[in-house]
Image 1 (spheres, rainbow, N blue to C red):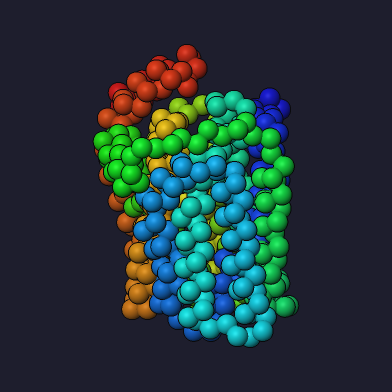
Image 2 (tube, one colour):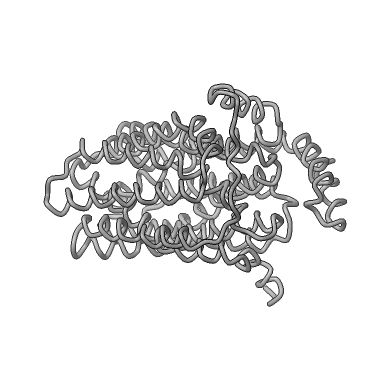
Length: 432
Protein backbone atom coordinates (compact mmCIF):
# COMPACT_ATOMS: atom_id res chain seq x y z
CA UNK A 1 0.00 0.00 0.00
CA UNK A 2 1.50 3.34 -1.06
CA UNK A 3 1.99 6.18 1.43
CA UNK A 4 -0.70 8.23 -0.31
CA UNK A 5 -3.17 5.36 -0.17
CA UNK A 6 -2.31 4.74 3.49
CA UNK A 7 -2.97 8.40 4.30
CA UNK A 8 -6.21 8.25 2.35
CA UNK A 9 -7.26 5.25 4.44
CA UNK A 10 -7.15 7.39 7.62
CA UNK A 11 -8.54 10.65 6.21
CA UNK A 12 -11.48 10.80 8.70
CA UNK A 13 -8.92 11.18 11.51
CA UNK A 14 -8.14 14.66 10.17
CA UNK A 15 -11.33 15.72 11.97
CA UNK A 16 -10.44 16.67 15.59
CA UNK A 17 -13.75 15.44 17.02
CA UNK A 18 -13.35 12.05 15.36
CA UNK A 19 -9.79 11.87 16.70
CA UNK A 20 -11.16 12.27 20.24
CA UNK A 21 -13.83 9.67 19.62
CA UNK A 22 -11.29 7.22 18.17
CA UNK A 23 -8.96 7.59 21.16
CA UNK A 24 -11.65 7.21 23.82
CA UNK A 25 -13.62 4.49 22.10
CA UNK A 26 -10.48 2.43 21.39
CA UNK A 27 -9.87 2.08 25.13
CA UNK A 28 -13.51 1.41 25.94
CA UNK A 29 -14.05 -1.25 23.28
CA UNK A 30 -11.07 -3.27 24.52
CA UNK A 31 -12.82 -3.44 27.89
CA UNK A 32 -16.08 -4.41 26.19
CA UNK A 33 -14.47 -7.37 24.43
CA UNK A 34 -12.83 -8.46 27.66
CA UNK A 35 -16.29 -8.53 29.25
CA UNK A 36 -17.82 -10.47 26.36
CA UNK A 37 -15.28 -13.23 26.61
CA UNK A 38 -15.32 -13.24 30.42
CA UNK A 39 -19.13 -13.42 30.52
CA UNK A 40 -19.31 -16.34 28.09
CA UNK A 41 -16.59 -18.22 29.98
CA UNK A 42 -18.32 -17.49 33.30
CA UNK A 43 -21.63 -18.88 32.03
CA UNK A 44 -19.97 -22.00 30.66
CA UNK A 45 -17.98 -22.49 33.89
CA UNK A 46 -21.11 -22.19 36.02
CA UNK A 47 -23.42 -24.31 33.83
CA UNK A 48 -21.27 -26.41 31.45
CA UNK A 49 -24.13 -26.01 28.96
CA UNK A 50 -24.04 -24.91 25.32
CA UNK A 51 -27.81 -24.35 25.47
CA UNK A 52 -27.51 -21.85 28.32
CA UNK A 53 -24.77 -19.98 26.46
CA UNK A 54 -27.36 -19.41 23.74
CA UNK A 55 -30.04 -18.44 26.26
CA UNK A 56 -27.84 -15.76 27.88
CA UNK A 57 -26.92 -14.31 24.50
CA UNK A 58 -30.60 -14.33 23.52
CA UNK A 59 -31.58 -12.45 26.69
CA UNK A 60 -29.27 -9.54 25.87
CA UNK A 61 -30.02 -9.25 22.18
CA UNK A 62 -33.78 -9.76 22.07
CA UNK A 63 -34.47 -6.59 24.08
CA UNK A 64 -32.29 -4.60 21.66
CA UNK A 65 -34.41 -5.94 18.82
CA UNK A 66 -37.73 -5.11 20.48
CA UNK A 67 -36.66 -1.57 21.37
CA UNK A 68 -35.02 -0.86 17.99
CA UNK A 69 -37.78 1.20 16.24
CA UNK A 70 -38.51 3.19 19.41
CA UNK A 71 -34.81 3.86 19.96
CA UNK A 72 -34.34 5.24 16.44
CA UNK A 73 -37.16 7.77 16.86
CA UNK A 74 -36.08 8.71 20.39
CA UNK A 75 -32.49 9.34 19.28
CA UNK A 76 -33.71 11.83 16.66
CA UNK A 77 -35.46 13.86 19.38
CA UNK A 78 -32.42 14.29 21.64
CA UNK A 79 -28.94 15.78 21.59
CA UNK A 80 -26.86 12.80 20.49
CA UNK A 81 -23.60 13.74 22.18
CA UNK A 82 -25.28 14.11 25.58
CA UNK A 83 -27.28 10.95 24.98
CA UNK A 84 -24.12 8.99 24.15
CA UNK A 85 -22.42 10.22 27.33
CA UNK A 86 -25.33 9.00 29.46
CA UNK A 87 -25.36 5.68 27.57
CA UNK A 88 -21.67 5.13 28.33
CA UNK A 89 -22.26 5.96 32.01
CA UNK A 90 -25.07 3.39 32.15
CA UNK A 91 -22.83 0.76 30.53
CA UNK A 92 -20.12 1.51 33.09
CA UNK A 93 -22.56 0.96 35.95
CA UNK A 94 -23.70 -2.36 34.47
CA UNK A 95 -20.12 -3.60 34.15
CA UNK A 96 -19.22 -2.51 37.70
CA UNK A 97 -22.24 -4.33 39.14
CA UNK A 98 -21.15 -7.48 37.26
CA UNK A 99 -17.65 -7.03 38.70
CA UNK A 100 -18.90 -6.59 42.27
CA UNK A 101 -21.13 -9.67 42.14
CA UNK A 102 -18.43 -11.83 40.55
CA UNK A 103 -15.58 -10.72 42.81
CA UNK A 104 -17.71 -11.37 45.91
CA UNK A 105 -18.75 -14.79 44.52
CA UNK A 106 -22.45 -13.82 44.60
CA UNK A 107 -23.03 -14.16 40.86
CA UNK A 108 -25.45 -16.76 39.52
CA UNK A 109 -27.10 -17.51 36.18
CA UNK A 110 -30.23 -15.44 36.85
CA UNK A 111 -28.21 -12.36 37.76
CA UNK A 112 -26.14 -12.78 34.59
CA UNK A 113 -29.37 -13.01 32.56
CA UNK A 114 -30.80 -9.84 34.12
CA UNK A 115 -27.60 -7.82 33.73
CA UNK A 116 -27.18 -9.04 30.14
CA UNK A 117 -30.74 -7.89 29.40
CA UNK A 118 -29.95 -4.48 30.95
CA UNK A 119 -26.95 -4.14 28.63
CA UNK A 120 -29.22 -5.11 25.75
CA UNK A 121 -31.52 -2.18 26.59
CA UNK A 122 -28.51 0.14 26.61
CA UNK A 123 -27.25 -1.24 23.28
CA UNK A 124 -30.63 -0.60 21.62
CA UNK A 125 -30.02 3.14 22.01
CA UNK A 126 -26.23 3.10 21.71
CA UNK A 127 -25.87 1.84 18.15
CA UNK A 128 -28.29 4.20 16.33
CA UNK A 129 -27.05 7.14 18.43
CA UNK A 130 -23.38 6.37 17.78
CA UNK A 131 -23.77 5.60 14.09
CA UNK A 132 -25.92 8.65 13.34
CA UNK A 133 -23.54 10.87 15.39
CA UNK A 134 -20.56 9.90 13.19
CA UNK A 135 -21.67 12.32 10.50
CA UNK A 136 -21.38 15.19 13.03
CA UNK A 137 -17.87 14.16 14.06
CA UNK A 138 -16.32 14.35 10.59
CA UNK A 139 -15.64 17.73 8.97
CA UNK A 140 -16.33 16.44 5.45
CA UNK A 141 -19.46 14.34 4.90
CA UNK A 142 -17.64 12.44 2.14
CA UNK A 143 -15.38 11.02 4.87
CA UNK A 144 -18.34 9.33 6.59
CA UNK A 145 -17.76 5.93 4.95
CA UNK A 146 -14.10 6.14 5.93
CA UNK A 147 -15.08 6.98 9.53
CA UNK A 148 -17.33 3.91 9.57
CA UNK A 149 -14.49 1.73 8.30
CA UNK A 150 -12.04 3.15 10.83
CA UNK A 151 -14.57 2.55 13.62
CA UNK A 152 -14.85 -1.04 12.40
CA UNK A 153 -11.06 -1.43 12.41
CA UNK A 154 -11.01 -0.04 15.95
CA UNK A 155 -13.58 -2.60 17.03
CA UNK A 156 -11.64 -5.35 15.25
CA UNK A 157 -8.41 -4.35 16.93
CA UNK A 158 -10.18 -4.42 20.28
CA UNK A 159 -11.56 -7.87 19.46
CA UNK A 160 -7.99 -8.96 18.81
CA UNK A 161 -6.51 -7.39 21.96
CA UNK A 162 -9.39 -7.65 24.43
CA UNK A 163 -9.99 -11.44 24.39
CA UNK A 164 -6.25 -12.16 24.46
CA UNK A 165 -5.89 -10.00 27.59
CA UNK A 166 -9.08 -11.44 29.07
CA UNK A 167 -7.85 -15.02 28.63
CA UNK A 168 -4.73 -14.23 30.65
CA UNK A 169 -6.62 -12.20 33.28
CA UNK A 170 -9.21 -14.95 33.78
CA UNK A 171 -6.49 -17.58 34.15
CA UNK A 172 -4.76 -15.54 36.90
CA UNK A 173 -7.44 -13.47 38.66
CA UNK A 174 -10.82 -14.65 37.34
CA UNK A 175 -13.65 -13.08 35.35
CA UNK A 176 -14.48 -10.33 37.86
CA UNK A 177 -11.34 -8.31 37.09
CA UNK A 178 -12.32 -8.24 33.40
CA UNK A 179 -15.68 -6.70 34.31
CA UNK A 180 -13.95 -4.18 36.58
CA UNK A 181 -11.53 -3.11 33.82
CA UNK A 182 -14.46 -2.74 31.43
CA UNK A 183 -16.37 -0.51 33.84
CA UNK A 184 -13.40 1.80 34.30
CA UNK A 185 -12.66 1.92 30.55
CA UNK A 186 -15.93 3.73 29.82
CA UNK A 187 -14.48 6.84 31.46
CA UNK A 188 -12.24 7.29 28.40
CA UNK A 189 -15.08 7.55 25.91
CA UNK A 190 -17.16 9.77 28.24
CA UNK A 191 -14.18 12.14 28.50
CA UNK A 192 -13.75 12.18 24.71
CA UNK A 193 -17.41 13.08 24.17
CA UNK A 194 -17.27 15.92 26.70
CA UNK A 195 -14.11 17.35 25.09
CA UNK A 196 -15.61 17.57 21.57
CA UNK A 197 -16.47 20.90 19.98
CA UNK A 198 -19.70 20.19 18.11
CA UNK A 199 -21.82 22.86 16.50
CA UNK A 200 -25.03 23.26 18.43
CA UNK A 201 -27.17 20.35 17.36
CA UNK A 202 -30.60 21.35 16.11
CA UNK A 203 -33.07 19.02 17.77
CA UNK A 204 -36.20 18.95 15.65
CA UNK A 205 -39.48 19.46 17.46
CA UNK A 206 -41.82 16.94 15.89
CA UNK A 207 -45.55 17.45 15.71
CA UNK A 208 -46.11 13.79 14.84
CA UNK A 209 -46.34 11.12 17.52
CA UNK A 210 -43.55 8.59 18.03
CA UNK A 211 -45.76 5.85 16.58
CA UNK A 212 -46.29 7.92 13.42
CA UNK A 213 -42.55 8.47 13.10
CA UNK A 214 -41.87 4.77 13.66
CA UNK A 215 -44.34 3.95 10.86
CA UNK A 216 -42.71 6.56 8.60
CA UNK A 217 -39.28 5.03 9.23
CA UNK A 218 -40.58 1.52 8.52
CA UNK A 219 -42.21 2.61 5.26
CA UNK A 220 -38.95 4.30 4.23
CA UNK A 221 -36.72 1.24 4.63
CA UNK A 222 -39.44 -1.12 3.36
CA UNK A 223 -39.91 0.68 0.05
CA UNK A 224 -36.27 1.72 -0.53
CA UNK A 225 -35.03 -1.37 -2.36
CA UNK A 226 -31.22 -1.11 -1.89
CA UNK A 227 -31.66 -0.47 1.85
CA UNK A 228 -34.32 -3.16 2.20
CA UNK A 229 -32.24 -5.81 0.40
CA UNK A 230 -29.11 -4.90 2.36
CA UNK A 231 -30.97 -5.16 5.67
CA UNK A 232 -32.47 -8.53 4.74
CA UNK A 233 -29.09 -9.94 3.74
CA UNK A 234 -27.42 -8.57 6.88
CA UNK A 235 -30.21 -9.98 9.03
CA UNK A 236 -29.85 -13.45 7.48
CA UNK A 237 -26.08 -13.33 7.89
CA UNK A 238 -26.50 -12.27 11.52
CA UNK A 239 -28.91 -15.15 12.05
CA UNK A 240 -26.58 -17.78 10.63
CA UNK A 241 -23.08 -16.30 10.71
CA UNK A 242 -22.53 -14.47 13.98
CA UNK A 243 -23.90 -17.02 16.49
CA UNK A 244 -20.89 -19.33 16.06
CA UNK A 245 -19.20 -17.12 18.69
CA UNK A 246 -21.67 -18.45 21.27
CA UNK A 247 -20.21 -21.93 20.80
CA UNK A 248 -16.53 -20.96 21.00
CA UNK A 249 -16.28 -21.97 24.70
CA UNK A 250 -17.51 -25.45 23.68
CA UNK A 251 -14.94 -25.69 20.88
CA UNK A 252 -12.18 -24.44 23.20
CA UNK A 253 -12.97 -26.93 25.96
CA UNK A 254 -14.36 -30.02 24.21
CA UNK A 255 -13.14 -29.99 20.60
CA UNK A 256 -9.69 -28.43 21.07
CA UNK A 257 -9.23 -29.64 24.69
CA UNK A 258 -8.06 -26.25 26.01
CA UNK A 259 -9.18 -23.64 28.52
CA UNK A 260 -9.83 -19.91 28.80
CA UNK A 261 -6.57 -19.14 26.98
CA UNK A 262 -7.72 -21.27 24.00
CA UNK A 263 -10.99 -19.35 23.91
CA UNK A 264 -8.96 -16.15 23.95
CA UNK A 265 -6.90 -17.30 20.97
CA UNK A 266 -10.00 -18.25 18.97
CA UNK A 267 -11.60 -14.86 19.65
CA UNK A 268 -8.35 -13.07 18.87
CA UNK A 269 -8.03 -14.94 15.56
CA UNK A 270 -11.52 -13.74 14.62
CA UNK A 271 -10.35 -10.25 15.49
CA UNK A 272 -7.32 -10.57 13.19
CA UNK A 273 -9.59 -11.35 10.25
CA UNK A 274 -11.91 -8.49 11.15
CA UNK A 275 -8.98 -6.09 11.45
CA UNK A 276 -7.66 -6.99 7.98
CA UNK A 277 -11.15 -6.58 6.55
CA UNK A 278 -11.70 -3.20 8.22
CA UNK A 279 -8.34 -1.86 7.05
CA UNK A 280 -9.10 -2.86 3.47
CA UNK A 281 -12.49 -1.14 3.69
CA UNK A 282 -10.85 1.99 5.12
CA UNK A 283 -8.49 2.09 2.13
CA UNK A 284 -11.41 2.28 -0.31
CA UNK A 285 -11.64 5.58 -2.17
CA UNK A 286 -15.41 5.58 -2.66
CA UNK A 287 -18.65 3.67 -2.12
CA UNK A 288 -18.38 1.92 -5.51
CA UNK A 289 -18.61 -1.88 -5.33
CA UNK A 290 -19.86 -2.16 -1.73
CA UNK A 291 -22.58 -4.62 -2.75
CA UNK A 292 -19.93 -7.00 -4.12
CA UNK A 293 -17.99 -6.63 -0.85
CA UNK A 294 -21.10 -7.76 1.05
CA UNK A 295 -21.55 -10.74 -1.27
CA UNK A 296 -17.97 -11.94 -0.98
CA UNK A 297 -18.06 -11.48 2.80
CA UNK A 298 -21.09 -13.75 3.21
CA UNK A 299 -19.57 -16.44 0.97
CA UNK A 300 -16.20 -16.41 2.78
CA UNK A 301 -17.95 -16.63 6.16
CA UNK A 302 -20.04 -19.62 5.09
CA UNK A 303 -17.12 -21.62 3.69
CA UNK A 304 -14.92 -20.84 6.72
CA UNK A 305 -17.59 -22.00 9.17
CA UNK A 306 -18.16 -25.25 7.27
CA UNK A 307 -14.46 -26.16 7.48
CA UNK A 308 -14.23 -24.93 11.09
CA UNK A 309 -16.83 -27.52 12.01
CA UNK A 310 -14.57 -30.25 10.61
CA UNK A 311 -11.38 -29.05 12.32
CA UNK A 312 -9.98 -30.44 15.57
CA UNK A 313 -6.51 -28.87 15.13
CA UNK A 314 -5.94 -25.57 16.90
CA UNK A 315 -3.75 -24.01 14.20
CA UNK A 316 -6.28 -24.80 11.46
CA UNK A 317 -9.17 -23.57 13.60
CA UNK A 318 -7.34 -20.28 14.18
CA UNK A 319 -6.81 -19.77 10.44
CA UNK A 320 -10.48 -20.52 9.74
CA UNK A 321 -11.55 -18.09 12.47
CA UNK A 322 -9.49 -15.42 10.71
CA UNK A 323 -11.44 -16.02 7.51
CA UNK A 324 -14.78 -16.11 9.35
CA UNK A 325 -13.98 -12.80 11.05
CA UNK A 326 -12.87 -11.30 7.74
CA UNK A 327 -16.11 -12.28 6.02
CA UNK A 328 -18.38 -11.09 8.82
CA UNK A 329 -16.67 -7.71 9.01
CA UNK A 330 -16.90 -7.29 5.23
CA UNK A 331 -20.64 -7.90 5.41
CA UNK A 332 -21.38 -5.82 8.53
CA UNK A 333 -19.24 -2.76 7.76
CA UNK A 334 -20.00 -2.64 4.05
CA UNK A 335 -23.73 -2.89 4.86
CA UNK A 336 -23.38 -0.02 7.31
CA UNK A 337 -21.42 2.09 4.81
CA UNK A 338 -23.85 1.35 1.98
CA UNK A 339 -26.96 2.22 4.00
CA UNK A 340 -25.50 5.47 5.37
CA UNK A 341 -24.39 6.51 1.88
CA UNK A 342 -27.96 6.12 0.58
CA UNK A 343 -30.36 7.36 3.28
CA UNK A 344 -31.50 10.94 3.72
CA UNK A 345 -30.32 12.88 6.79
CA UNK A 346 -33.75 13.06 8.42
CA UNK A 347 -34.01 9.26 8.22
CA UNK A 348 -30.47 8.39 9.30
CA UNK A 349 -31.14 7.51 12.96
CA UNK A 350 -34.29 5.56 12.12
CA UNK A 351 -32.54 3.70 9.29
CA UNK A 352 -29.66 2.80 11.60
CA UNK A 353 -32.13 1.58 14.21
CA UNK A 354 -33.28 -0.98 11.64
CA UNK A 355 -29.65 -1.87 11.01
CA UNK A 356 -29.41 -2.44 14.76
CA UNK A 357 -32.56 -4.57 14.61
CA UNK A 358 -31.17 -6.58 11.70
CA UNK A 359 -28.33 -7.66 13.97
CA UNK A 360 -29.93 -7.71 17.40
CA UNK A 361 -33.14 -9.20 16.01
CA UNK A 362 -31.48 -12.05 14.15
CA UNK A 363 -28.50 -12.80 16.38
CA UNK A 364 -30.54 -13.66 19.52
CA UNK A 365 -32.67 -16.18 17.66
CA UNK A 366 -29.51 -17.47 16.01
CA UNK A 367 -27.82 -17.79 19.41
CA UNK A 368 -30.80 -19.66 20.83
CA UNK A 369 -30.95 -21.84 17.73
CA UNK A 370 -27.26 -22.81 17.71
CA UNK A 371 -27.31 -23.41 21.46
CA UNK A 372 -30.22 -25.83 21.08
CA UNK A 373 -28.76 -27.49 17.96
CA UNK A 374 -25.37 -27.92 19.64
CA UNK A 375 -27.14 -29.56 22.58
CA UNK A 376 -28.79 -32.07 20.23
CA UNK A 377 -26.33 -32.66 17.36
CA UNK A 378 -23.08 -31.21 18.71
CA UNK A 379 -21.26 -27.94 18.16
CA UNK A 380 -19.25 -29.00 15.05
CA UNK A 381 -22.30 -30.11 13.06
CA UNK A 382 -24.19 -27.00 14.13
CA UNK A 383 -21.47 -24.67 12.82
CA UNK A 384 -21.25 -26.59 9.54
CA UNK A 385 -25.03 -26.22 9.10
CA UNK A 386 -25.01 -22.47 9.73
CA UNK A 387 -22.06 -22.07 7.34
CA UNK A 388 -24.00 -23.86 4.60
CA UNK A 389 -26.94 -21.49 5.19
CA UNK A 390 -24.60 -18.50 4.73
CA UNK A 391 -23.54 -19.88 1.35
CA UNK A 392 -27.21 -20.15 0.34
CA UNK A 393 -27.76 -16.51 1.37
CA UNK A 394 -24.83 -15.49 -0.83
CA UNK A 395 -26.36 -17.34 -3.80
CA UNK A 396 -29.73 -15.61 -3.26
CA UNK A 397 -28.07 -12.19 -2.97
CA UNK A 398 -26.24 -12.76 -6.27
CA UNK A 399 -29.57 -12.76 -8.10
CA UNK A 400 -30.67 -9.53 -6.35
CA UNK A 401 -27.56 -7.51 -7.20
CA UNK A 402 -28.32 -6.25 -10.76
CA UNK A 403 -31.56 -4.46 -9.84
CA UNK A 404 -30.14 -3.19 -6.55
CA UNK A 405 -27.00 -1.78 -8.20
CA UNK A 406 -29.01 -0.01 -10.89
CA UNK A 407 -31.04 1.79 -8.24
CA UNK A 408 -27.92 2.73 -6.26
CA UNK A 409 -26.23 4.09 -9.41
CA UNK A 410 -28.94 6.71 -9.92
CA UNK A 411 -28.73 7.84 -6.29
CA UNK A 412 -24.94 8.15 -6.31
CA UNK A 413 -25.07 10.15 -9.54
CA UNK A 414 -27.54 12.60 -7.98
CA UNK A 415 -25.63 13.01 -4.72
CA UNK A 416 -22.19 13.17 -6.35
CA UNK A 417 -20.68 10.55 -4.06
CA UNK A 418 -18.71 8.88 -6.87
CA UNK A 419 -15.81 10.37 -8.83
CA UNK A 420 -16.55 10.67 -12.54
CA UNK A 421 -14.00 7.98 -13.41
CA UNK A 422 -15.93 5.46 -11.28
CA UNK A 423 -19.40 6.05 -12.68
CA UNK A 424 -18.83 3.83 -15.72
CA UNK A 425 -17.59 0.79 -13.74
CA UNK A 426 -20.59 1.07 -11.43
CA UNK A 427 -22.90 1.19 -14.40
CA UNK A 428 -21.23 -1.91 -15.83
CA UNK A 429 -21.63 -3.64 -12.46
CA UNK A 430 -25.34 -2.80 -12.47
CA UNK A 431 -25.73 -4.15 -16.00
CA UNK A 432 -24.23 -7.47 -15.03
